[in-house]
Length: 191
Image 1 (cartoon, helix red, strand yellow):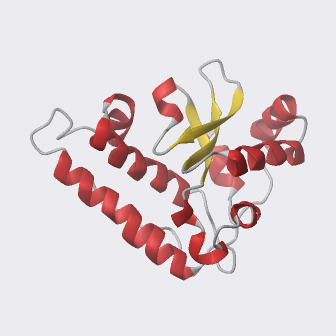
Image 2: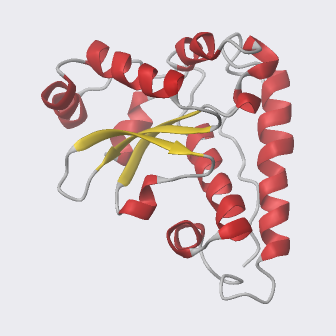
Image 3: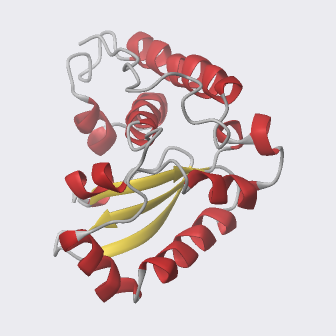
């Protein structure tokens, strides 16, 4: 199976001023593309040659896992954004957030802390456990909650390439900008 860079449902400059076109040119156009190219080269002749990304994330190790998971994570990340996002959840997801975290502002505070305090590079996730409970999970490097049997709902990429061109080393500024483009309609669909 040949893996491809997915098309974005918006233009590279559509999320400005929060995420710049220049960041997308590097983050999506170069980093994400490099993971696709690397994975396609690495899987030739392996048991993962015809595997889906979900299978690779759940079962692979080493370079195949790292590149496959980074494709999965980045695709998931980029597809949760919109230039005209629904800025608050409603329905069952809103209720679950209130039950688990107390309120949307309290959830965001905890999620922001998970993003800001993740040492080095990785991802912060909102995920649903196998028993249906919401959890905030920090994953280093290419980590993904799928490996634990969780359903990912929302993620924030805290690798520096996600924000360095726009905010340099100011990860908290990036985290605040992130909330302006997250489309809760997408997250509700994943819930």
